[in-house]
Image (cartoon, rainbow, N blue to C red; front, side, top):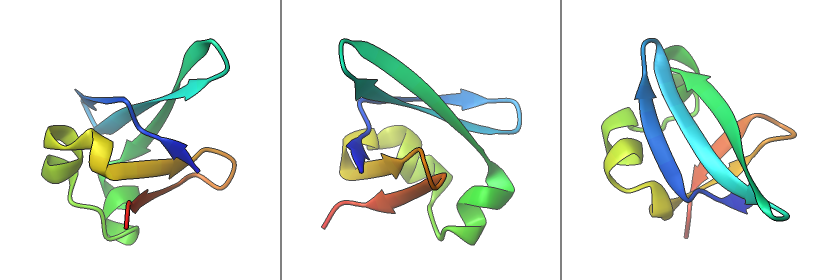
Length: 64
């Protein structure tokens, strides 16, 4: 799991940015995927540091 450092609203979902080595990588999720993962898109946009992303399995989870 990677900590999310930033998010951005996209036309059909949310882009999440996470560190990978010296780079910042992007993983995008559409609204349907966020609903399936039980992630509130507005909260993700307002509080990105409260979440982590698993880019290999294309999942987002709230930090404990």
